[in-house]
Image (cartoon, rainbow, N blue to C red; front, side, top):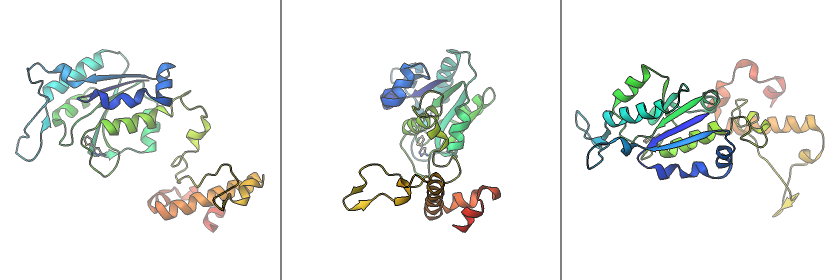
Length: 242
Ligand SMILES: Nc1cc(-c2cccs2)n[nH]1
């Protein structure tokens, strides 16, 4: 997969080169290119935004600059691309979104400012490629860069070879519709707190049942919306008894 990010703050994307993702890039499992939007300005001030038509606070990013930037970035590789635009006004980015995007050959992320990018950039792009305007949560950031870090990590960890232990991607929170339950490791007792007996019993069936119960309990407590959204057949009799 090739990932391109267009931003006025390229330095904000430096963390992509760290740790697990950095190693995946070095291993060629994923390619990441970060581009400075100002490279496509032609005025001495390198203006990328302007006052909004109709008035109102803040500035809107100019369509001309974005149009030239996206044309250039898209032309750099013949693989078909999906354009992703982070915005608080977007559809929710979920694990299912990351799963779907993990199958793409190319993702191009356009980092805008809170007040947004001129809508014509998205509309014009949507005529020639899939475009997703997505939100990573119901809170407002200053720019899209942090949202891109979140989404790139969520997608890249699903790519073959990126996670040392691939099975964990399937057992993630959300992958079965429930939150993950509590996890424990050594020591057996820590500050007077012990690991639940069942986890040391060696009875795999009992352990699986305990873990499922803890996931159901946590999901009911913290995310009842996820429980309500589960397909009818997702909970078996033992689950319902819980
Ligand atoms: N979920 C979310 C996205 C954003 C922004 C994207 C671009 C500028 S602000 N805030 N919150």
